[in-house]
Amino acid sequence: MDMGKIHFYEKTTDSLRLGILLAIVGGYLDAYTYIGRDVFANAQTGNIVLLGIYAAQGRWMQAMLVVPPILAFVLGVLAAESIKTLDARGLIHDWAQGVLFLEIIILVIVGFIPASAPNLLVTVTISFIASVQVSSFRTLIDTPYCSTMCTGNLRTASKCLYMAVTKRDRLEAQRASWLLIIIASFLVGAVAGSFLTERFSEKSVWIAALILLASLGMLALEERKTKRASR
Image (cartoon, rainbow, N blue to C red; front, side):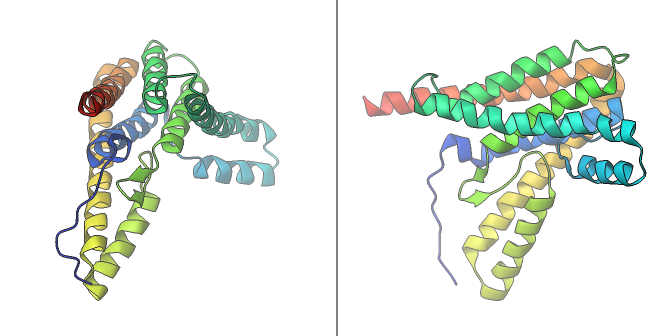
């Protein structure tokens, strides 16, 4: 399937440039919680597995400790959907900007939590942020993706590459390239998060907040351009 040159209309919320920034933040936060708190907080698969293991072993205290991050992730989904509902009802200006602003405020607060504080306090908070982000930004141009974990992106990219090679499909090749860029961005974020967390401890999370601030500025600038064009 040869489609020639392919053109896409990109909303800023679905754009590759925003996806790159969000993926960097996703990798950064995962490294931040692992280096600083010895856990991964972005995805809940590990916590659910641990819950099952501890329950099977009758280690109920340990089992209860992995429940809060799971609940925080659920609350993050509810928060993201609530923000979108408020936008649809005209009660807030823009759901995407609202989501990023919420993430930024929480990350600034996290930076003030000392390293001596219980790990659970930070992991629950990061789980909530990751959930809000992954529930809000789910499309990369025209392709489903995830900015806080890589498994689904890797699966979809592999499938797209297969279709691109076997069917000579340029569209699938393009999609594969987008997803591989997102995966690479996540890796860059993880490297940066590891390096900076080891040097600046809990304050290093503010770098992720700055990246989200840049993302927020991008959305605000695009909105301004759209308003000017419509006049």
